[in-house]
Image (cartoon, rainbow, N blue to C red; front, top):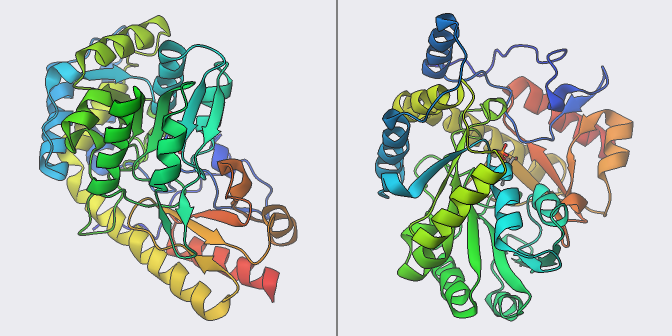
Length: 377
Ligand SMILES: Cc1ncc(COP(=O)(O)O)c(C=O)c1O
């Protein structure tokens, strides 16, 4: 059993999340306060002790580790020739926007969604076409009528899909994904499916890889996958893109190489191989801990803070909450030191929401909830 209650102090380690005032409690950026899985640490230690950090190639074990994991965990066979190493999901998405669009075009995103999608789009001369998700007061679905209207815009040639969804934690259904694939095929849109959160799911639940759903999804899809969110190794910069469409794969391979985002550092493959071949037990314990944190937070808020509505979710360690008023991030931070992510950054529909990162010790979770309660009471 891993002890997720006793965690190292991250202050003073250059951790972005913890670059905050002494009295502040950071529950914002999406990384976890948990040390990496023991087998990952051991593999990294071994690589470090070798002591030579020259240029590396991608070994066969890297391909086998990804395909073995997706086969076992997600019942989907990744073909070796479809996989390309890259240094991160956002580097891959930014490269894809540069390669697959022309400046001035629109890139479709379903908002509210991971804020950095906006940067990848705008930094490369395109505009974000916000196709709002449907919110019924309890949770999110796809507004498929609206999606068709937006996909059919001739200025749209690329869509960024977030599967599972950040910030809502929604796992898209096979039917919803099939409809995305059908529309993408019909209107000639390429779909980048960002699946970085796919391994952080409620025990007993699984996600559906976009490319696994239909031939239309395979024809239109490029998946971005990585061990970095689930195993808390984002700082190691290790990810992959996968496509079964030969033309799109060639484009992505050229894009990543042109942008020099296809070369591994000395730890990138080692960490991914260890995580995907030996990390299952740690991951299952981590997910159980995080989903218990979610239960505690939801129960606490229901009992103590009924003016807040938490959105139920089966994926990610992020809790999306509808507040009684818009724009509450700043006053909560100023008054209590609790630092949450402001829903506004995720685009239209996020104004009344805050996002809380639950991947912390239970003690820290309780402190965060106490501060939230102090703010209102
Ligand atoms: C949906 C999503 N995609 C991508 C990333 C970042 O990916 P990377 O660190 O591989 O660039 C994040 C990080 O929070 C994320 O939530």
